[in-house]
Length: 108
Length: 153
Image 1 (tube, rainbow over the protein chains, first blue to last red):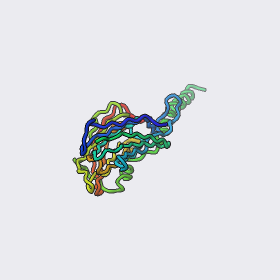
Image 2 (cartoon, rainbow over the protein chains, first blue to last red; image 1 turned 180 degrees about the horizontal axis):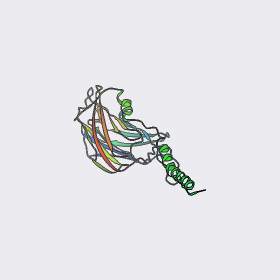
Image 3 (cartoon, each protein chain N blue to C red; image 1 turned 60 degrees about the horizontal axis):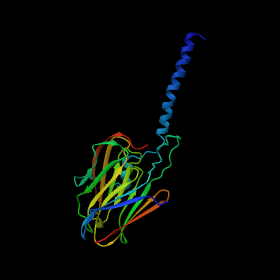
Image 4 (cartoon, chains in turn orange, green; image 1 turned 90 degrees about the vertical axis):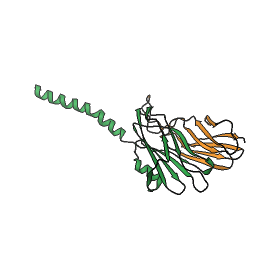
């Protein structure tokens, strides 16, 4: 099941050599494996994002290791230097093997 | 049964009833294995010293109303050149069950060492940001965050 994910680049207009901010959000419950379900009293099994990878063209630009202390619906934001017109791909992986991909085109 | 004996028995049962839920609760809470901050830091640095530095800027609210969503911003005042750059930014929440929160690995293609995310805090604690430079040195910044409602279950 692919999850809903959003990627936003700011500012909207940029040219070669500019540094832009790339923000992304993915809808994910991020269960820590420590909290209990209030209705049943059972511990909710751990289900969280473990890795986020960012590819700019063929190059792996940034990658993250994520642990359960990150909030639900993880939001991440980082800078990127625009050097070429290439697709920016963000890949999310979680501990149950779900993989979500989102591609944004960078036009120069 | 005379009055003295009755009171003794009643007292004992009352105290047993009063104590048992507390004891039960403690055993449940002690169950999840808790990593200490030092252990988590060692995972990242491999035992290397970490220097406090004003180069690392950690922006977090002084008072967070909801511990489940605490926005954190980190920027490192360091050039991003091919042979001299910020390799990684690590965020720790000192007293969470797993203090290691997120590790970001950057490359010179980022242009600027900046990262922002939202983290969970179980209670009032210090948030630590550690920046890893390409030459192997570690810099850190620390900030206390007051939490009114905890965020870990």
